[in-house]
Amino acid sequence: MTEQFDVPPVAGAVPPVPVVPVPVSASPELPRKAFVMEPLPEAGGIAYCEMFTEKGVKINLTGRGHTAAEAADNLVDGIMHAASKYKWVADPAKLSRPAPTQYATPPPPTSYPAGAPVPAVAAVVSGVMHSNKMESKPRPDGRVDLGFFDADKPQLKYAEINACQGAADLVKILQGVGSWTPAHFAAAATYPVDYDIHWVASTNTKKSGEPYKNIVSVTPHK
Image (cartoon, rainbow, N blue to C red; front, side, top):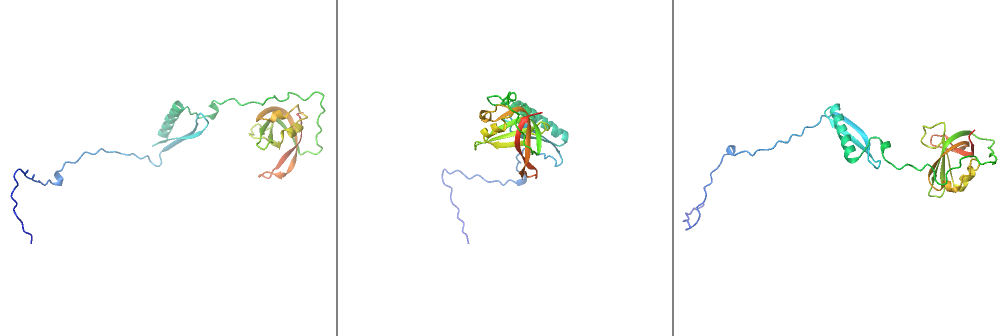
């Protein structure tokens, strides 16, 4: 049993504030700000393109919208913004780059050496290719990759016949078509030529099963 005692008020004390219960329904409701996220439909429009930075880095740019037309408009806005602010371009060919060196110093021989005998062609060859461009690329091991492009296949980006030898050995291969020297192969270079490349099929084959082509001799184009 709990006993209750009346305590007399203390002089100078502040009387307690009566607590009045307030119904929950009567309490004011704080205003809330509504945030509505409008999701794009799964079947909405998507448009994209490739752009390139000033250093040639490719960027994939995408525009989205409820419809294909809206996505295209958003993509165009993004393209214009990227071109204006970041100087991105859609065509990498329009990038400002230093012009490549056409050939190293000294320049390539301009004609067949006067009075020099025409080099003998091996009796057995698998084929002859007309080349209008020769490309040299020095290797870290001291050898040089020498590539001849097929004049009849200008669409090809890579050399059709290659030789990988030291610069002195390449000079011997080319001795019948001009006064080439090791200095011509000291740096990466591309030379315009007009040569016939005589080759034989190698016993080694590519992944496609096609045999490699070994150079037998190089002569002026007939």
